[in-house]
Length: 204
Image 1 (cartoon, one colour):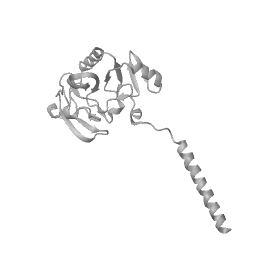
Image 2 (cartoon, rainbow, N blue to C red):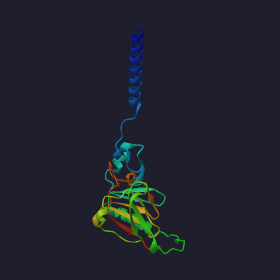
Image 3 (cartoon, helix red, strand yellow):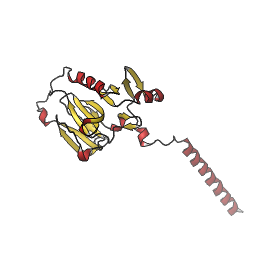
Image 4 (cartoon, rainbow, N blue to C red):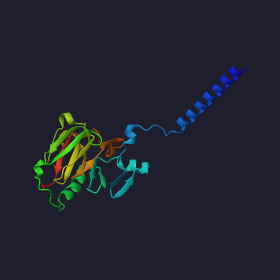
């Protein structure tokens, strides 16, 4: 009799534990894929209007045809369908008056740093100040984070070799911990996508 009660108590305890586990699992948020978690940058200005990922439907519709992105030094992000429009924006930035660099170090020693992992980790590739790269070769589609050196007006990354395809302009001294936060196409980011780059503007 005592054994029967013990077994019954054990069964009830096991049943209660399973119920608690099932409830906890059901309460968890649905699984989010890595690509969805690394969605495009939260706000972008397109044709003079600001769109936020908080309003997903309008945001995705506005960015559907964006192929060229310009990120100014304050982080404000603009999207363009035509490369010529992005070119004009970047040219205006390049012609803006700029302060002289300091520190007494020749800009020739400055290098932009590219990493194959997020948060400036993994393998490192250093590109000397002002060196345009038409083909990343082994580094094509490999960059996940970066630090842009001081000097010139910024750097423009391209999706394909020889400065073709979609592009993103980043201001001088920009640091991007995760290119997965930067919009390339709908449902696609700049993580592991860049294959060539140009330094923009005049030497400082």
